[in-house]
Image (tube, rainbow, N blue to C red; front, side):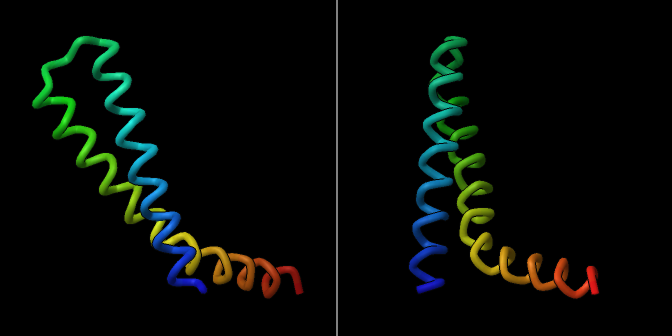
Length: 69
């Protein structure tokens, strides 16, 4: 289940970041090649961050529980 959740977060993060960058790029009338390259890099970064999110959340909450004791 965690792998499926990680894949969904990765795909969602990559799509949302790419669309956001593409929208801003078209709004500022940037060249198409610049928009595509920036959206690809941003989508990759947010995809990787989204993929690691399901593994980071339990680890962070466990550390917080252990520090409060």
